[in-house]
Image (cartoon, rainbow, N blue to C red):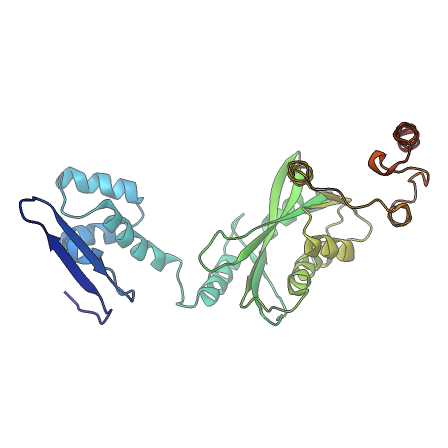
Length: 301
């Protein structure tokens, strides 16, 4: 067994007249795990030669020949993961590995072909993007509504994943993806927005997407990018996010809303009746209710 300078210690406490012992150990530094030494060589060879199987399938097959193994299912998973990762881990640097995979996929045929999108460098950020050309060739001219959504904290490298979707017969059709990683918390302001604009511009200029509607959540980087690249499209917020924002706001107790400024409101929404004031700010609540009723009539007329 290999030894490591991990400043570890082992403390065992044994009591008289007791069948129990307290064992405590600690490693200050991480080192190579010991799981592989417990798995016999024939089992390791079996996992290596059958890495296309799932960990569950491998474990079930191992139990058939060895019903009471001296190793755990987790050990089998680690060996399987180390072997299967060789198929997609093309380089120790994950970004280089991803670019190699995208380059290989760009030469593939059928719906699995991808197209790399060239991105500029933004200080404090790392990004990679690609589109699905076969999908765009087939469905691009039919798409009139596109949406952009992101997911974060879904991988160990802290890449934020953006997916561009097109609406087809009520379903979302993936068109392309953008992955962004902030190398530090001091990334340049507007870096994400610049990358999103580049992504959208690729679909507008090369694939000639002409959406009538665009859709995002309340992320201002996404909203500003859509308004800049597709200025004639009507931008809308995701209905689910709107409902969640309202429910979240209403669930906050003993929190007064911002004071209503009619000049500020009318600058953004010219159709608002200048005599309208919220009931809580009105000297006469009954008159305020009448004003609200009149405002609703004007909006819906």
